[in-house]
Image (cartoon, rainbow, N blue to C red; front, top):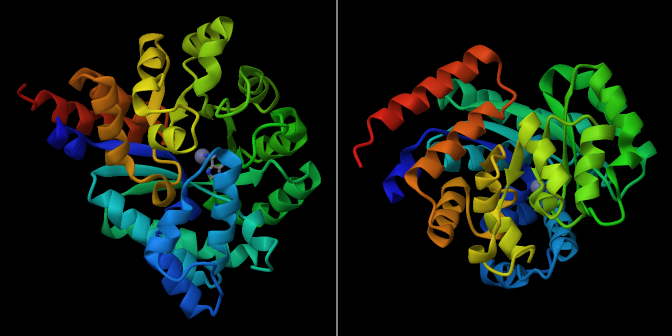
Length: 336
Ligand code: ADE
Ligand code: ZN
């Protein structure tokens, strides 16, 4: 099982690139850019990663990313992530970034997207990893700020596949961003939103009905609403679940309590993802392994999760079929 999880072709669809900033790179970029960090060592950084909820994590996450300044910093951050997932046989990635957390510090949008995009293109040609980039709006900021960010981003329209919604969920319902998302859709951008991570099932409905999202990020609280589960199942709206994140942010007390298996049993299109791997103790393979062990997932469950990851991606039909074919050849070669 361990080897199968490592080797199975898979996609990652819920990954914040700023959440891949490992403590060693944080310290190095802090030195490189002369930024004073509240930490002196990797041990001190790791000790600070004891989260009680989403907000306690976000405070540390936004503070950590202040070391990112140059185009090269964004390139190095993205390349480090891509090298890690290349070694985990991740074949396709759809990456979030939070431009407002950088432009609010005076970093030009062009520099952020330029560094990330350069790394994604290099990984496409040298590592065979395909990718898409999704701009996330910070939902604790105003809709006007999000709209301003979208206008900036439209200059780089061809570098994006979609827009998303992240940051503090409670008290920030999706409807706040209806107009921004409508404008993004007018430009052919796909839409996704974090919903039902800490927030109620009504936020999942709101994201579908008002933001017209193609996927829900997290969505684990959907099981509290039977009618919603039936709708998600009937429409096969993918839910990008992040098991290690959910345990570290205390959405579930321990992995054994995670409702992933119930979601699969309910016929939902669930995918596994790592969210902010540098903060939550694992990349994609570690998420599959932790969930498999605690929930006693079968090989068929793992195959289904990998299959869902390609089905739920924003790849075009031809690329989707090619990767699903690769997955099926892998699956047929499995002996036990
Ligand atoms: N930003 C980075 N990770 C996030 C998460 N898990 N939920 C909401 N916003 C985030
Ligand atoms: Zn997330």
